[in-house]
Structures are given as C-alpha cells and as structure tokens.
Length: 229
Image (tube, rainbow, N blue to C red; front, side):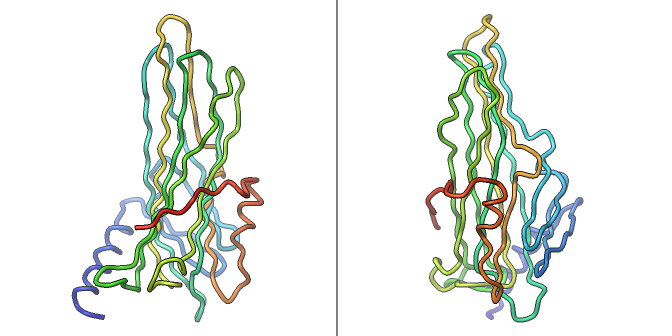
C-alpha cells in the first residue's frame, strides 16, 4: 500500500472512531465500535447484527408551527474478528410510527447507508458506496400508524471491492413533521421505535443471513434501489 493510501485509511479510521462516547459491542464474527451519545442510543447484538435503542428520535410540529426537521448521523466501525472471514453484505432495516391530524399536517422519513473500506482502495481512494431510501405513503389521518423501510448493499457490486475485513458504515436519518394551519389544533409527529434500527452484516464462509434481520423486523421487500458513488 502506498504511503498516500495508508494516510487516507488512517484518517478515515480516526474520523469514524474518535468519540468521547465510543462504545464497543461484539457479534459472532465482528466487532462494532460506535458513538452511543447520539439519538440512536445504545446497541445490542444478535449474531452479526447490531440493533439500536433510539432515545427520543422524534420530529413533532403542532398548530401551524411549520416544518420541524430532525437529522442524525451514526458512524459504526465494523471489524472482522474470525480469521479468514470477510464481510460481503450489509442490510439496514428501520421502523417507527407517526400521527397526523389536520389538512396541513404531514411527515417525511428518509435515510442513507454509506460504506467505506478500511483496507481496499478503488483507484487512489478507499472504496466507497452508498444506498438511500425514502418512506412513501405516510398519509393516514387520525390514527397512530406504523412505518418501515430500509436498504441493502452488496460489496461485490462495487468494482474492485468485493469483500472486506474492516468497513466504516455511516447511517444518516432524516425525519420531518409539518403543520401549516394555526388555530385549528393541527398535529404531526413521526419517530423511530426502540430496537427497530438494525444493521445486519453478512460474513463468509457463513451462509448468507442478510434476510434474517428483515424477517425479524417484518420489512422484507421494502428495500429501496441502490445508488452508488
């Protein structure tokens, strides 16, 4: 590896792991390092999946307050611990609920999963890719309603990458609640539910397990289309 590429990877590792509240949890074959001071809260693991417990991850607007946005970003370093195993796939699954009351009440939810290699360069820069999702159909009035969505990334879809032993994952979520009419008691809120922000990591030579997380959360088939950089 050239000194230039090495410096890039060291800088990335410092960016993703430098935190006053860095926490570490272990899966069967991987180690997750993340910041537990964000709205995502603390984490638990099952197999090679990491699940978060959001703390007040909620956007709310009332009585003509207008657009109230909420955005949060979480950085996770994923390192393989089992010798001769590599990471091949990531899947992000999320869920929550929302409430609308009023003609001018609306909510939105969207997210992005970005992955950057800690070991492999595509050209002069570390390999990177991302995938986004937008939640549609958030229009039910006067009833608390569940929503779910997610996205997935196969490292083999990125030319020159394929699999890895250290990956920096970044999850960004955007929520917004809007009320436009004053004096009529309009209300809008949207939030993430506890234990329903999960990142599944598939390693080989284990059989692919990416759909186990999705089945557990009931969001199979809701993945958005990939968009890569």
